[in-house]
Amino acid sequence: MIKENIERVRRRIGQACVKIKADPGKITIVCVTKGRTVIQIQEAASYGLKDIGENRVQEAMEKYKQFSGLTWHMIGHLQSNKVKEAVKIFDFIHSVDSISLVQAIDKQAARINKIQDVFLEVKTSPEAAKFGFSSQALNVACAEITKLRNIKIKGLMTIAPLVSNAEEARPYFAELRQLRDKLNPAWLLSMGMSDDFLAAIEEGADIIRLGRAIFEDNV
Ligand SMILES: *Cc1c(COP(=O)(O)O)cnc(C)c1O
Image (cartoon, rainbow, N blue to C red; front, side, top):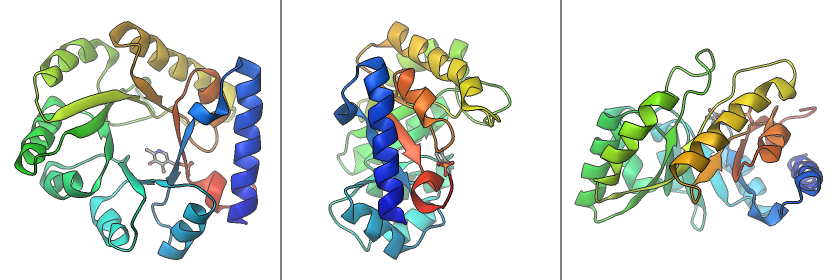
């Protein structure tokens, strides 16, 4: 089932890319493995999904030990008391949602001589996410974060609200793209989940985060 799901996802990504004349090779699928077993992760990785997304540090640490050669993405809200461990294992932290958090990440990264790649989470809709910078707060946040020596901003991340029709998520993705274009056109966009990734790709997503579309039937 995982194999068929991945093939189906790739076909759909291909179709969305044809529509917007983009190279499907530029889209990274982060395989979201929260609540999934090590065996499921192995299977997904064997079909080429080497980017793994987890939303809890503890769960990620247990799984991380059992793999090599994968790229780990923190996608859930990060508590300050978990920063030290998170910086040790995650290649990317997508869920940077406050200045104090990113300062804590910088401090821990400096201790282990690491430049931590991060995405700034943006609250594009008030109802979708509890966490994230408002679009208005981003300018100031970026100026502050740019001063931190052990942080590299790779892009912006958002979670669209749960909607019955993926088309309704599109304006939130468009908003993230516009913010990115304004702040730094070189940044990547981490946006789109199982129910709305096609709309996200059409609005310029570079990284989509998929759980159910890979591991469950009939998504
Ligand atoms: C769980 C999760 C996903 C994946 O959601 P699916 O609907 O299973 O594709 C993506 N991003 C974040 C931040 C998540 O917590």
